[in-house]
Image 1 (cartoon, rainbow over the protein chains, first blue to last red):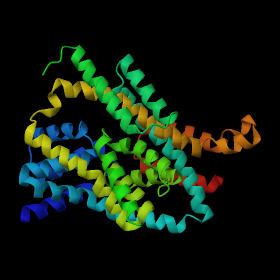
Image 2 (cartoon, chains in turn purple, blue):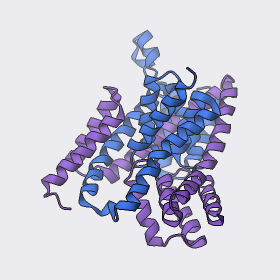
Image 3 (cartoon, each protein chain N blue to C red):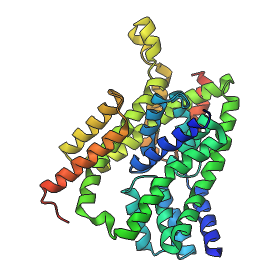
Image 4 (cartoon, each protein chain N blue to C red):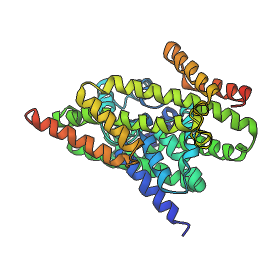
Length: 180
Length: 190
């Protein structure tokens, strides 16, 4: 019981103190999970993290589930996951309620007009980063363009794009000999 | 049929959790898709939501689901959306840790992800285009006047270039740029 509670609290801290998710969470996970609690070794954490990146869903949640499940089975997975999402639930709900009440004030509207411009720059920055790490060849360029056009112009659900791109990956694997 | 919105919230965010691969902003294209199909989530709130999700602690996908759920149906909505988003993760990870050791080292998995990564980048670019359309381009005004000078909001475009260059040159936390842009927005009356 004590370890489950510790798990919830530790992942609460991780969720509540890291900004930005993704890679920002790794140093925090190292400190809390490896150094403080000794729930996993450095190598295990890197493995969980790598799997978290190539499975669907939020990377931090995937990693938390992995560590929780390895230590304490299903209950551990639930406690770790509940911990990592708890701070978001509280903080974001409060902010969303706050914004709804203040959205009619002109100064707030001007502030958000400015913020939206910053968001454009943030998203473009994220796309450039993903392009550099993910688009390695002509097939990559075609996949990027096809995904963009299917969503921005045709309005297709991203679900189809993800399925189609996954199938392309399977076909390419078969063509290269289909190693197990 | 008030409970219908919760069923839809759960279904849509479960789907987003199942298909959004790669973390970070990968959930964003799914939110635009949801906003296009239902009236309980408006595309107009999504840019603000990204700003809030990036400036608060916690995983961005979870923050966005909580925010969108709250907008759709209050506190119960934020709980429903967030639980739905993480459920596929929990199920998939438990299966993987039970049955598949060294999952990510399998050649087929690596090949699938080599193809998914550029597609996800394209999906996020498409979501980014939606934000551009409402914050820098003024397409509605252009449709009325048919005057090319009314196609772009000039102060917004300049602010965008300044923020983008500073971000690339100096780096630093997004919250700094979001706060700075809010102040500029008030001063310029954007």
